[in-house]
Length: 122
Image 1 (cartoon, rainbow, N blue to C red):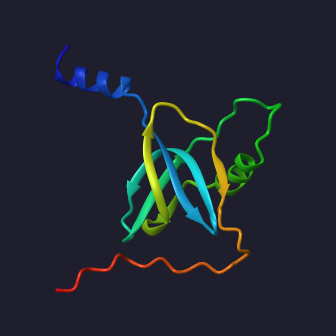
Image 2: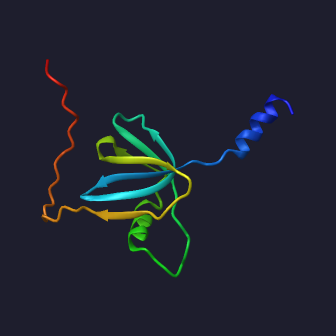
Image 3: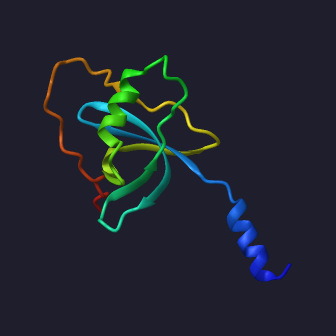
């Protein structure tokens, strides 16, 4: 086996990374699984692509996963503002995509605009 063959072998056998992305969206927390998460060329955005939607069972239907599937099913890639991202984890296997209701039940439909962190004054 020469160098080229070893490189091709490594590429073919490389496992695909799976990422769990949690972010705020319109007062709710979205939890999505994807195979590609990168820093976007657009300033202050995270690019998420190749979404993973489970086909585990046709008998049990999770309404939040179905809602996410209809919202992101035809999307090739999405750009999430950096201020909205809660956490990005690389995981061994995908879980169920879900929407978590915000614990703030004040009924307020207005959300504050995310601001950058303040720099200390000297």
